[in-house]
Each structure stands twice: as structure tokens, then as C-alpha cells.
Image 1 (spheres, rainbow, N blue to C red):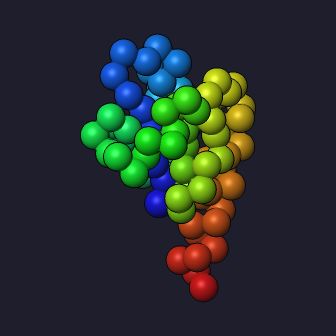
Image 2 (cartoon, rainbow, N blue to C red):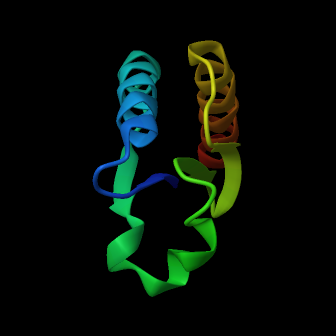
Image 3 (tube, rainbow, N blue to C red):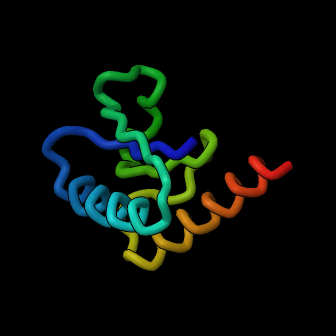
Length: 86
């Protein structure tokens, strides 16, 4: 499971989502976008957003490049594919 943690009025989050959504389309991955203001369990991520979680573990935090996102999502795709084949 891949999640993108965000909050309203966060320009870094908007940029991050643009990058993650582009790469997720290319890699054919489903990414759920989650607003941390609606989720008390995500309060620990307030200072670190945007955050991309793969199976509940952070793989990207704060600002990152497009290539950082591509690499993290490619690894997530490989891991997911391996789990399905097992």
C-alpha cells in the first residue's frame, strides 16, 4: 500500500503530489492521498510532510526531486510485484 500524506495549503505538498502522481501513472501504481489534518494517527508527520509511505514506512519526506520519487516508487513497485508472485 502506498500513501501520500499531505495537508491543505501546503505548496511543497502540491509539488510533491504532482511528482508522485506522475510517476505512479507511469509505473501503474495506486497511491492513496491522505490529509493528515483528518487523521490523528498521522500527527507525528506534521513537521515532515509531504510524506510517502510504502506499507506504513516512510520512503520520502519533505522536499525531494523527481528522480527521488521515481526511485522510491520503482522500489515499491518491485516489492509489490514480488509479493504478488510469491
